[in-house]
Length: 383
Image (cartoon, rainbow, N blue to C red):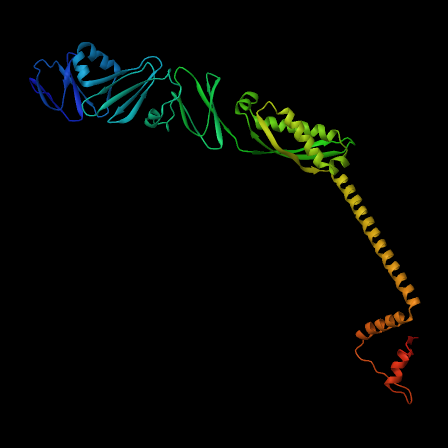
């Protein structure tokens, strides 16, 4: 507030004011009420919030040049050199990460300011103590980081050159005066479906074959160096292998010997992918799709074969039954008692289907005479 002959300035606890006369820095005004004699209206003030506050470097440099003690008493100046980074903390909390060749000035007086300087060129990996203090949730061009899961591995490249392989965990690297790239790879077995493609067999039949493969990475560095997309490379290699295998076989060979075809495919693909850093654990034919007319012909052939087999079995059974009857007849011819027993067996079966039987004996004949008529013995010999 300006009076007739004086300037009054009230500075709060969380503020500081810069006093200037005719545009030239005079001093820093601390908290309190300041009454300044200014009959010529030559004084001006500028107030700043100082809790974790910052003053522009150009303004600070001007103050430091004309009043070095005032600059040292009121500011913490940070200047980083080549390949140097700085972590600026307020009251123990990391707040700013400064890159090389940066300059910043922070107000003293309210917050405790700490500055930790790090030579990023001397150490590629960010120390665990520093890693815990950095807010890596925010994208920062000075830091390359990766969280590697238990089923993964990661390769670290500096300026395009491979440096090291790291395992599961949290990893961070200084991306200062260098370009650091962290590439993660999944080490779990992975499935690959090779969709149906039309191929001509040796006997000029068009078939569509679908493959299934299971593969995994065994040499991550070879995978990165050998192919930009290893899954797509495997897909193409498997396509070439199945085309060669099918073209060299007839349709009957393909349908009859799929195990041998699978083994040949695995061997062929393994040779072609040996330099890719992967291994194909399983590879086989999933489906063989035939044209409609070929499928109908095969169904007819199968049906005819089944019919012929059924007829053969029926003839064999008839032959066996006839042979059994012939043997039975021969036994009956030689043994009259056996013949009579067979007659009684037939009579028993007949009686089972009859609800009622009435027996009528002739004049003077009883039940005994009827039974003697059915079966008569002479001595010990049946007739």
